Amino acid sequence: MISYLRSLGGEVFLNRPVRRLEDLPACRATLCDVTPRQLLTIAGPGLSPVYRNRLKQFRYGMGAFKIDWALAGPVPWTAQECARAATVHLGGTLDEIAASERTAWQGYQARKPFVLLVQPSLFDSARAPQGKHTLWTYCHAPNNSQVDASERIEAQIERFAPGFRHMVLARHVSPPSELERRNANLVGGDIGGGAPTLGQLFFRPTRQLYATSKKGLYLCSSSTPPGAGVHGMCGYFAAQKALREMF
Image (cartoon, rainbow, N blue to C red; front, side, top):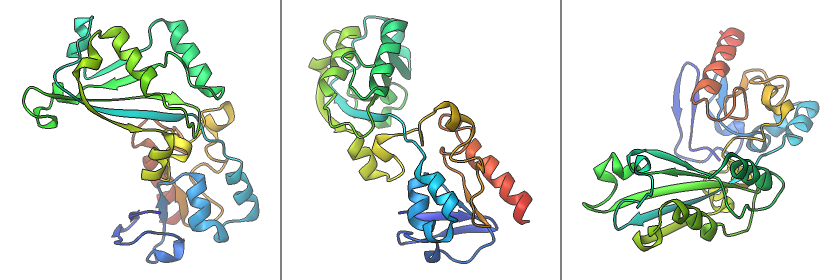
């Protein structure tokens, strides 16, 4: 479940999976960078019934559909500004972007998905052989979607970069299920650690936030405030709480 764990008072590195808390060395405070589902798996018996039920009610959000490409050259953007950008957001009009996200949230794959696209080899020559390029992108999809969004994503890129498909040497597709297979925290392909609903925006995953019902056990993942996208702050706030309570 976890390849290693950081504990206050030092770092503990394990060469085996952690399937339950008893697999870990004894320590005063344990911070778990996992979502509620994984916490239930590794710590469930030690948690109170009320707290376990609240974790079970935690709602996961949209999944992600990711593609990596090897390209014969740079993306042939119509807008030259895009050829100088590390990250490009492809969505057309604001109405199209809103429709794409709304559709995925409602459980359907958008025909014209809002695509986040990254061009690492434009700025790091070690990412591809000389003259070649790499590219990766993802769009939102319904949680655990089985729909292949490859054609729709490539059509969206082709829309803004005519001739893109002729540049493709190889591609690797990672649907939501593949993302979860690689990382159990990405439940249904949810890369945000849980749905950002009004309730879960402030109380993630419960009103106890980083603390759990077990003394010395804390959550520090994006399933806690301020959530995904504010990198490092979930762990920072969880560590601050643990330091106040345990030391």
